Length: 262
Image (cartoon, rainbow, N blue to C red; front, side, top):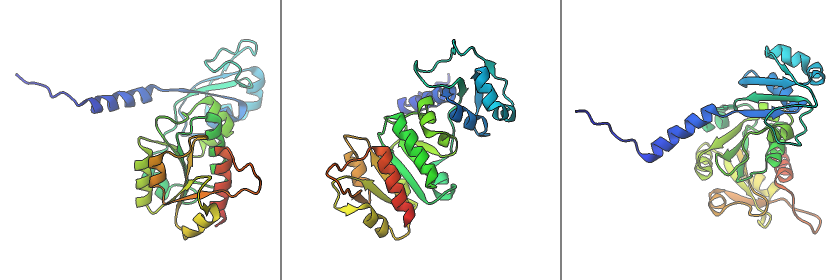
């Protein structure tokens, strides 16, 4: 009689997680987010709900996508998004984007040899703004841990104002391991810390033209100890005034500018 081999718990959990991810969908909303998703051939689109007014504004994008929209009464816009969301009469159910493997994107992806790593930044509005800045400054990717980070949501997409469709947002199982992988690829990892002795300009200069990873922590707790230890250098953004603090999305924009200016 043949006996089966029981799979280890971690293997079962991993397979279950993959099946759950395969079933996962996201509702995007707002004219910009929906238009850019419609125009993105890499985005798997499932359902499109528009008011007549929104359809008039998105007509070209809808035609290019080949989707058949459901026309909704603006007084009863019945889609599963948070109450109070500014949807502008446009919502679309999609699958999350798959940008590929960390190594492929960070070594040979489009853009500058520059990435942003987010350590437990969970606010979708902050992450959306970081994605927008990363796209503006030509970064190759924004990287975050799969858990304890902002998931791909309608709120994030709306804040990103279309950048979510173009700027790789990579989720990794373990951030410190991903950081070690980046270092093996030749990246210099600069962690932002308001109390660091080195300034951002000095840290960028010391990288000597090598690829740069900017590591940002959540507001309040900042970088976790393991994340700090894995960085090559900690740097601060110098402030002229007494109130020396920026939120993570603003700090990311300043750091990206400093990195690209070199």
